[in-house]
Image 1 (cartoon, rainbow, N blue to C red):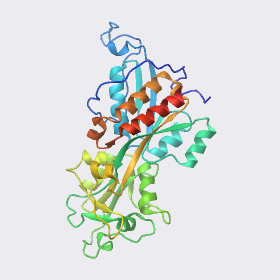
Image 2: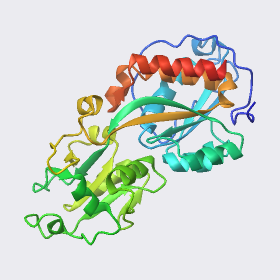
Image 3: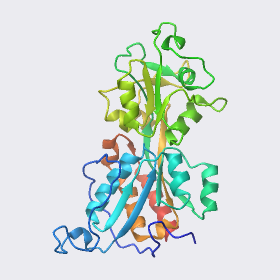
Image 4: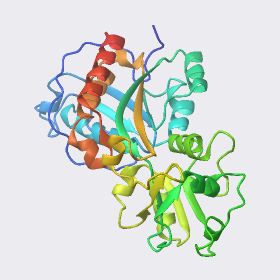
Length: 337
């Protein structure tokens, strides 16, 4: 058996039925239940129906800024139904979450915008943490430019590689295409601890080169949006949900993988059918030991069931399919049973 859950190890007994639609999405930096945890209702009467099932405890979530809005919404709704459960959600980047929290055994769940790496699995193993993978949504990773950049509507992978490779001598837009303006390219993107950085580096920049360090890195996707918005030569990339909520502030660029390919816009429909070349799956990873914790188990079950609902699409991602949901739930019960 694994080490104790950071939330406190207790025997898992399944007794809840997750139901109902998720309410309003809250994009806070950290979601936390403020109930006293003494079993009383909000008025001190002890009549709060959210406490009636007896479920209590803490769930700690770290990881991907891309997955953060989904986990944040799930935490809000779950705590609304279970008033004695505290769910905290922090955006640390996929890699930052694995390295600093999940693999050391200090969080229960890690959101990830790319699969866990062999090195991360090895780190987890060294701390007796066994990660359990659940694919929970799909994303259309979006490249965006300033709204006034009317010269660019579509970029090829080769052009993106020129802009973002550390071996490239591209500094101005005219260096990419002669007909584009002699204006400096201002790059904004995720930090190297981000799964989005890893995905873009592997799938666009390529294995033979490295991502440029000549850009402004951040774990805050809203900061990337602001940088692009405020600089006419700005360009950056992030999860589709952040474009979806800032579509008036920046312009999404169509992408084509090959020179003779078709320019395709980032959209949920294009991500779902696979026509968009930067479509990718999104994950959460749970510690096997944490799944022995009643509150963590029930929260994960709730999360996996709701990942198929409209809330994921409203945030700006492709919901998991019924088949994916069933596979996830079967895996959950196999691991936690």
